[in-house]
View 1 (cartoon, rainbow, N blue to C red):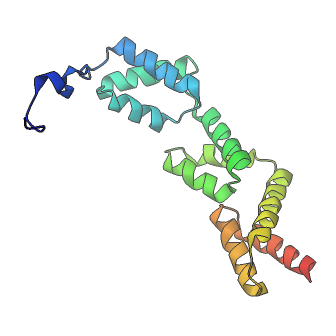
View 2 (spheres, rainbow, N blue to C red):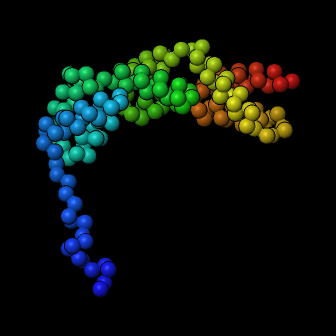
View 3 (spheres, one colour):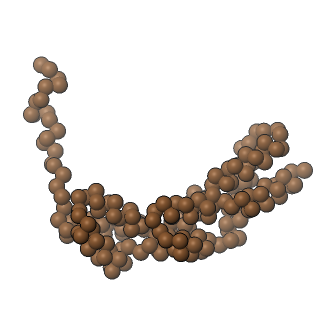
Length: 174
């Protein structure tokens, strides 16, 4: 018996075919999707398009989600900024770029990034810097300094803050 032959008893056609959801089913799925975690409009639009909805249906569901508090870009931007800063240690530059990529406007981006406490922000950058310093084995101070600067800028911290903190660390090691 040829294992590649079409055998109806073992085919994948027995799976339930994907059907396009009704508008009510799509609305319910979108509500659950937004209730699980904060979402941007762009993320919700992609999800609804993946369900096979047309633009009119998509717009109707988006209006419903906004009206009923499931979707709020200001709330999303603040949650995203705070979460990425606290859990991932991202700096403001990286957070801004990511929010821009998610289709948020500049005002919302600036407000959400501005809501990060500046003392906590600098403390987090120092914490990351000292942790990274412990992991470096380079004897040459210039190489260590360059690696630390590259690490913090890669995390999305501003150059002036990075230079200041690396300089302080270098001076304390002397």
